Image (tube, rainbow, N blue to C red):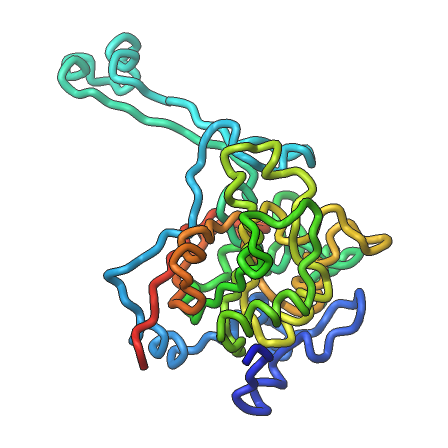
Length: 324
């Protein structure tokens, strides 16, 4: 069993991908003001249902650590992750930056600051990240909604905490390798074959994670970022039409790099955001899920509420599901 399982016609009608047109902005089935797309398929009932089966005593952390020199989008001109101390115990005693000169020998105060691209490390993308021409999901137009510093809609602050059934599609394991070959394209056949081999069913409302094995290269930034294997548009269409609310992966860009679609250097991003209304996650550590053959789980995660931002750091978790 591997294909989409539509619960009812009403739910199927809410899957934006079913009515999407190639390289055209899709109007949301959830209304003219909708800014979160398929995340609307989460309901109090669906969240309670998956939480009621979650084994909180066995929680897997799906995030990576942040460190100087970590893989990031520096090749695209984006700033790297940086961390620096703003205060140190001895320095504070010397310059009295706190104003408590008589206490600085006793109180050892340390503080720090970070700077980074919002799409650095394990993170969630928002629907204003990519679109076509000057419009994004649901027809929001840059001329009306893009300010001097950020979009005025569809930002990270609008995304709700995500509590849903998670599914791992382990494509590297399907092919019996630790990591897929460079620039390998993951299409519908790989995804459906993996689901069948793992005996999992894709359902509307799922958070779907795709494992390429790229995380095994995480500590080698050059290798991790070079010619990534990832989803093709065909693969993304299969998952979106199955009703996925989030599609994530363990690589930097989610999709196959370089693109094989003429005229579009990130066809999966533009398709999932602008046409299908599906949120993306990247740089997700899926190794423990793979090692435990944990193909179905309770997914919990929330990005930072950065107003108007196109993405935000996230620390997602997975918990095995107890028998129903």
